[in-house]
Amino acid sequence: MKICFLGMDNLPVLADEFKAYGIGGEQVQQTLLARSLTEIGHDVRMVVYDYGQADRRAWDGIMTHRAYRPADGMPMLRFFYPRWTKTWHALRDADADIYYVSCAGMLLGLVAMFCKLHGRKLVFRVAHDTDCRPDALLIKYWRDKKLYEYGLRRADLILVQSYQQQSEMLRNYAKKSVVAKMLVQPPRAAVTRDIDVLWVNNLRHFKRPDLLIQLAQRMPHLRFCMIGGRQENFSELYDEIHDLARKLPNLQFLGRVPYQEMSSYYGRARVFVNTSDSEGFPNSYLQAWIHGTPTVAFFDPDSIIDREQLGFAVRSLDEMCEKVADLVGDKQLHEEYSSNCKSYMKSAYADSAVLATYLSEMKEVCGG
Image (tube, rainbow, N blue to C red; front, side, top):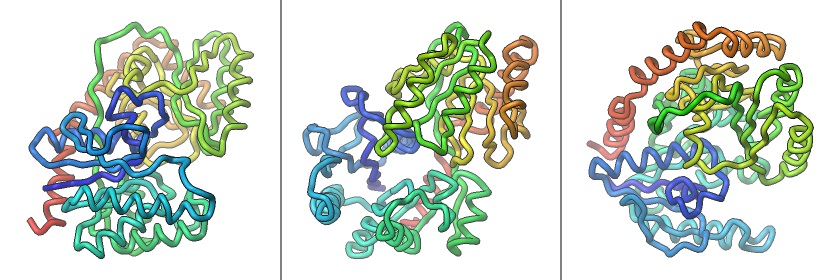
């Protein structure tokens, strides 16, 4: 198969020289999947932002097609040029059998139009629970919401992260979908666990970074580490959290850390904390668990944390304090949950098993 991933922000994960740019979990997932498909012989392409790199340059055997610079174009007009026109040009240049898009947004609609016009197949990957809820979409403009819904109706295959998403996609959009697990990069060399509590997220309001500040204030005897980059339209929040963090001697605020350097932080942490009130299936959970780092979180997709004893799903900040203290303070308890995390990842997230779902579904879309 010839597969093209539309992942504008993927290059900072794929190529070390661009690692200073920000990313999210879906960029990691697309890149890991693209690498795995390339390794087993498929022709894999990516449409990415123009960061100044050469067009049609390949990394790890993955050919990249340059679209446009994120800031290019005049307001109101840039939707058509350069965004629509240059995206379609890159899609034509990729000339793939299947085009793979993640995250709710107008790009899904643009790719759906392209696929319809050129007789290609479209795969959409849900990245957040709100992608399945028309009344909660994280899309700013009415036009972009309509383009997303247009693309969703015309997708040949929809992949979701959880059974809850599968149910909501069917109920809200009358679209069947397939639950597909995520890939995760194996841990590097073991390191000393010198971070008691680790928090990793892009700084946006629904991630609730203020609760991590409160947690660190309540537990001054523990060492906290907070990692998260500045996001477009959320600069004030970033500055506010940064200023609050600087006042706490037990909290290290690192801002954005390149994906390539994240493994050691997950390995150094005793506990991984997530304060978000809504997610998809956080890539950070998998990275924590494969390092044997238990999770304490408000969000528990398909009740996996509780069911597999990978940490604790909590409902209040008081309960979060209690469970973090238990895992940090009780060595035997921590070892038990750390072992659960490693065993679960080994049994449920073996690369070959995860990849098999993607391969079988995409082959079916292509008629075998």
